Image (cartoon, rainbow, N blue to C red):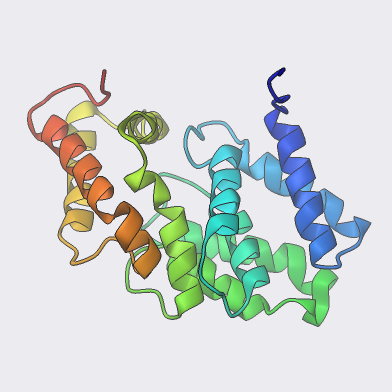
Amino acid sequence: MPSATILPIRDRWAARWDQTREWLGLGLAFVPVGERLFAAYSAPGRHYHDARHVLSCLDELERFPGNLADHDAAELALWFHDAVYDVRAAPGANEAESARFYRREFADLAGRLIDHGRVEEHILATRHASPPPTRDAAAVVDIDLCTLGAPPVRYDAYAEGIRAEYAHVAEDDYRRGRAAVLRGFLGKKWIYHTRHYRQLLEKPARDNLARELHSLDEGLPCHFP
């Protein structure tokens, strides 16, 4: 049988946005919102936090086996959680700006169809600075971190993408900063907050993080064979 057609990323994005828009009962006025969102995720310098990451998160949400109190809010949070991404920003600033980006695009057009405060709460939870405040937020946060527990070849591509996003940072400085981030994750009792992802990804995530940390500490290349 012939292989399935692989759509260009822009077409995949548009089709998935239309699916979300129609499910939420939002009209054609929201088509340009999806286009502006795609433009944000396609900005120069994005090598991991891009449209592919968002689509991967949305696919993962569809596979999540638990019941969510508000699936729509979780889905919208994943669409917007990295809409603003500036590697030079202060910790938490990108998530705050992404939440504001969402509010500007949705508050007036969607009115009371969406619980805007809940969407913003989920976006802010992806700062990973404190435990998620709700079970839904925990699912959003865990989905955002699924790549940490991906097979090694996919994790390595993620690590290379992060390094590329910080290309302006000198090698020694990057190694120290990145190692601190990895140790922060490894120092937690749990990386993942939901039972599903703890069972599925906790061990492979720790293995991946420890492997990258070893490379950083030993002065090995920041990519893997």
